[in-house]
Length: 192
Image (spheres, rainbow, N blue to C red):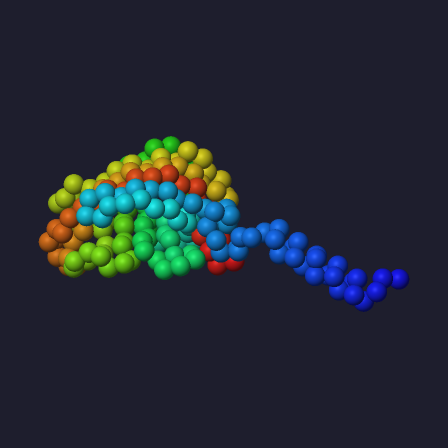
């Protein structure tokens, strides 16, 4: 029969081994649970970054809207500095996009893009979009979906969006160009 001291030492050893076996927390990027985006940005904001990538698809028409969105963000393990999305919105049900190349142009029923700088570095606005001022500015780009399933969507994107000093004004503040690659997982993963 083992002594209490031996059992205690064995228990401490097992706890130590178990604790070392997975040094990543469930909320850390890179463990696959939150997907990943890697991108560069140029124009009024310069740099490159990585973060989480999700896809979300409403086939039920909640609030009268059907949509398919790719959502990119950081801040899962720290302060948020950016978020951006590429999405398609309709008033009627439609199928999720298959692998292929899609235009981002902000026109009804096509893909649209928006970028938001959460640090507030910009003067007058922190939001850029291709859906403002009815095509008065050069915006848009391309979304390439290379593979899609119910648990993962992979692809790349490149788009230009314009920034304005409020959504009621077409006073142009500038442009940003965003391009990168992604592996997105279901948006529900963010909440479990």
